[in-house]
Length: 630
Image 1 (cartoon, rainbow, N blue to C red):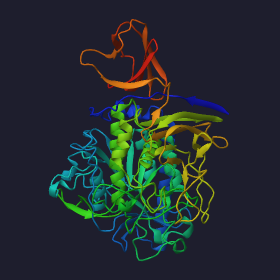
Image 2: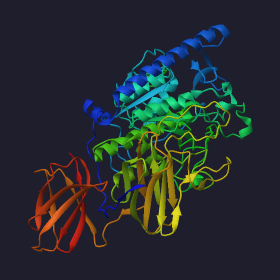
Image 3: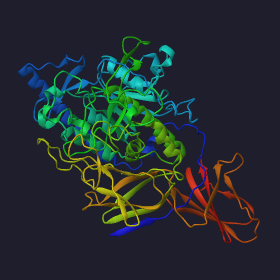
Image 4: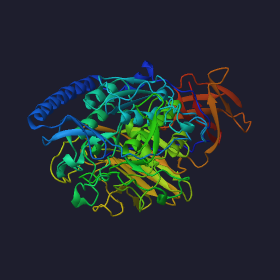
């Protein structure tokens, strides 16, 4: 096998402070979509539009023949609408996913006035919503920042509440408690009809995040539908694969909330269904809000309605949990109206708004936006532990969404964290050496956007839906550390071993110490010839170079006077000196000779981003960190 080995450098201090926001203008959308196959996305949108139209027409024909209602109110008070047919020919109704309770939450540490000093509020960032009918676009909370992009005419409380949770300002709400996660973002809203075609078109135009707080009605599903990889799952995965920066975020469902017990032989598990089993999306569970700072897994309590996984092939679903109880947000009854609701519908927009802020921060520091796999992997990698045992489970997924930890990993990329977007070709392996800080937990994750799999209607089909099976291992001496995977029984703790089903793999090494080697490889043959993936390492990690490298200083450019950075040499020696610039992926990008003890080096050729500068003079070497902020 061809092996690629990278050794990188001990880095300098962490950058503090904020930078100006970047608008998702036409130029920004070009940055997002520069590697997309636009013809494929256009073809996909047209194919899905044709399929969705035919399905809806056939559903309407059968509704007239069989007396199916086109819309109705469920026993739980949710609004249901006939949107098409299930894979087995039954009617497919989408319903809103709220159960008449309330919660409040914020991503306060990232927002203006927050503890990190970043002032991230979604300025000039775009998010989209697919939901029931349309939000009340004239609501004061949106401040003219919301556009309705399809033919929906009826205003709905549910979509207004969900969109307000993502990007409402909270204007006219009591104490401002109705404020959303990204309160200065702009939004586009669609109803839930023809969603896959519209998603493909929006993604082709540069959409980064969308929220979907709706799903099928559990009482109308066959037993084989629960946990199955459906045609809707495959469609969502296909859109995400063809638009690699686009992340779809979905509510897990509230199917433990009703009096009727669904899928009764599974004891409350195996309830996630329809598109929520997709590999490349984030599916969100609901929990009670914390009453104090997170201190341990016992703080996180699952909401009584939140649907449990896993999928039929034992993948980790839901992926992540967020506050889903007692949220105050905008409703459609008036331009200043607010109400409180609970549900996974309310948890999902918390993650959507937070994910948008993570993209905003990443773009401030680096030349590109994150791939959706990087963002999805980062959210799961930095989650707070929840549940009865370490590791993921089918109730909370990887744990409680922690936007602060995620943004700190972005801030510290190249110092105490390592976030790299890579690609693996057939028969290749990639390895990197890292040093863990004494006594801390070393965490290593890979995540990738997998090609769409084949839909299955078989009952409890255990065949993996993965097309490309990547693997991560961490070694130290004779010891090999494996990623988490779910146990074979629902309530048993997760185990560590060879994971053949998930397209996110995470290794946790408590009380780590010293040097470790991280290796990424793959099984079999990659169906696409190569597979892009994201590698994330945290825990005070330092990337390794020669023993005498000293990490000491960092500089920030632009200099007010010129496009240069000052390289200071400390020993006053007259020996020749040089500076070699490396990006965070360890690639040499510039070399220059230094002529004196204080050198102003022209860095106009460097793109925006974080760089390490190895300064060599005689026997001395130093590493400095600079941030180029064009």
